[in-house]
Length: 111
Length: 115
Image: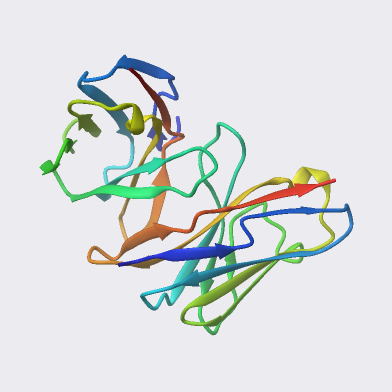
């Protein structure tokens, strides 16, 4: 079992839909959780950063962490075609600041 | 804040030649930088951790003599792919720790194609 599991998709949704992206993990020592967005042929861009359990909202994006279930989510409201990208979850902790990445979920928002 | 640049953005070279990729933190000092490789439709694979003023730490399976890393200053780390072969063709991305949350910020990546 990989430390971080993420469905690669692709996930195709119509413009305006609410998107739910998820990751599960096995290492209970993870405390820092991140979501990155990566456009094709570009480096990842940090979207959300959360510590421990709970919710964090930033504009159309909401990150949720459920440490008891070892499950994290990223919600995108009112999705736009410009949101089409690969979304990578990442997490770190347990004495290491080097994050472990999921393989990324490809999101396609069609007009 | 926390902007990382990479140069070149893409490079094509002949098999057997060496290629140097630069990674710069533009608005912060990065005592630690990371080098990743990413194959198409795959996640980021950490190659090595680069520490300013000391030797890099390589991940298992990464040849340190083939991928030379130099972190000579707090804002510059370089990755040199020596004697490149077609199987080294990939997307190389660096990152540095910075910003308000002291987390990783990535460069735009360098696409290497070895013919």
